[in-house]
Length: 114
Image 1 (tube, rainbow, N blue to C red):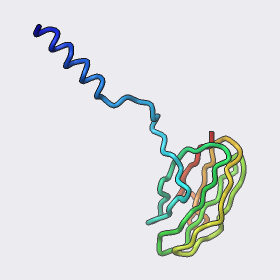
Image 2 (cartoon, one colour):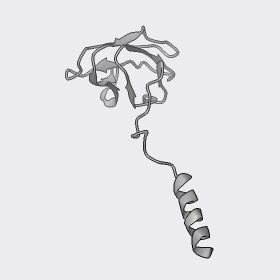
Image 3 (cartoon, rainbow, N blue to C red):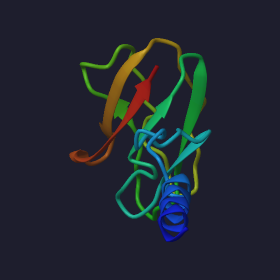
């Protein structure tokens, strides 16, 4: 009886333990926020055909421009504090690494399009 009870508790523990599944991927929101010299989220994943915007929530100019290795280019230009970019279509699968239009490679992020 005691062995069955221990086995039951062990199985219950396994059933209640979070399993992988998410792969650690953060879904891209419709709007990527730019607070305090960073992107939130800085890395995210979405599907082809998705659209995103960037919103500058900082007190200084920021924006986003893709690196040369991106499947397609985008450039939000410099966004003033409180401004939101035009919608960016992410139609081609691949990795879109981007940096800040105003601060260069000291500030960057990545969107993976599947």
